[in-house]
Image 1 (cartoon, rainbow, N blue to C red):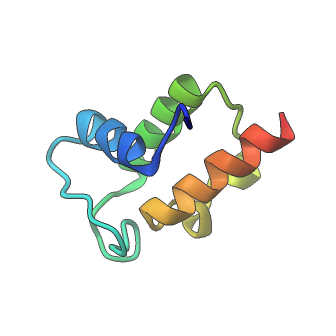
Image 2: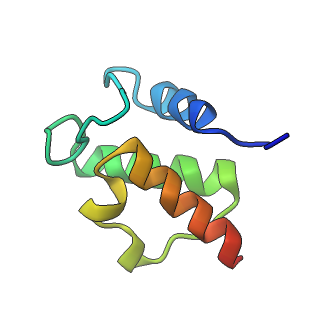
Length: 81
């Protein structure tokens, strides 16, 4: 059984940004749901929870504009660590 799931990621996001409604397919940055502080909050949360190191070039709209793109980034980082 997989230790981490996308549902667990959504729970993590909701616990760190409780005023944001997260739903599959939503655009987080380009849709105005999160700002730069929200991105940094997510970076810190996923770095700690998933024990990954994010490089400055990882922190982009492409990687943080949806739950799916964040999940993809986490999986890539876990494979490469």
